[in-house]
Image (cartoon, rainbow over all chains, first blue to last red; front, side, top):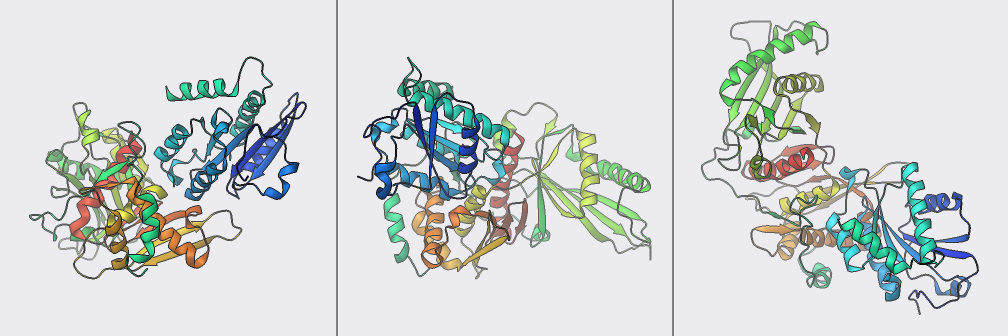
Length: 177
Length: 328
């Protein structure tokens, strides 16, 4: 039962949960703080994990996860391998719009250790949007936090008329142009 | 590493994967690269011997407008005048008792990939000694050369009157580099930029150069990593016996005549997992900053050293490609 499943638990009232998965030493902590600072009309839980599977001991205390964001730093090949290994522990139904890839470090192409084709392929293989950002810059961190919050709202079903699957298709189609 | 056995495990998992195709014709990271051409039979190694074992700083140069290789002597004279006037303004390096700087420009026709490439151009600055102005011993103080090896991508769309020499290599004082660079920029309306080498491209160099066959025994393949996020900077140096490295590469590289991204990944992954098995450190989380092999050595700040003349063209081909992608 180490695999994360999207509908195993009941949702909480007026609450949405996001799981950020990324190698230690990354910008997840700061991104989480930026998300908490934003104005919103619902409660959010932000869980941080360095990799999957999550420890089973605390599973009964965890809320239902609405959105998983995998953080990849292009300066570290290890972060990509960590994400690729973690993807095996996610139930396939999460990939209907409840997963996204956050690729950071794109501000400095000269420090790139990961080749872009692998990242594009990851997004295509897992049918999930890939968001490029530079989380070390505060302005972009705030903007990314706002985008994630919006996605989280949709994935938690809090936006009437827009489902997670529809929104992810919208994002992928516009990115491909 | 002792021969093929320890790496067999890492290889077997990966063999099934398909080759990654490039996303678009001019993608940022090519899915594969052609192997550099081998030793050219009619190239005279003596002519290019002076390029070896020196540290060259790399720049990318946008195409030169109205540059003619027939006018090199005139250009040399004009550049000499420019340097003299800059010195009078007090902007140049001033050495006691010198008569002046002599500029020599010459062509290096053997440094090119094919007939389509323009011939390389060498600029040398020498100091004239004040002891005997006639038969003075001139001391070479600065060298810089432009070249283009297999620059087909850029050469195709080039408009009239433009010469494409995208790679510039410099050995000498930074102050002279600035003066010569600004003269070229003013005269030919081009733009110089430092060419940095990303860790990804350094892994390509490590793989390609390890695979080159060298006659006599060469130096070890050495990789230098810098560890981020630490209060004290930490560098890790990983040296591999050249024969072991070549044996590993030979088991990985299968496509004849070209190298794919996947092969480079498998090669590096084998080296990383071997290191992790012994030291429990994930080198893939660090930054690769320098690669040294028997063929050449490259630093991520854009510094290169050539060690073998027979593979000079091959290394220049890769560097030209990096320079062109920085210009575009």
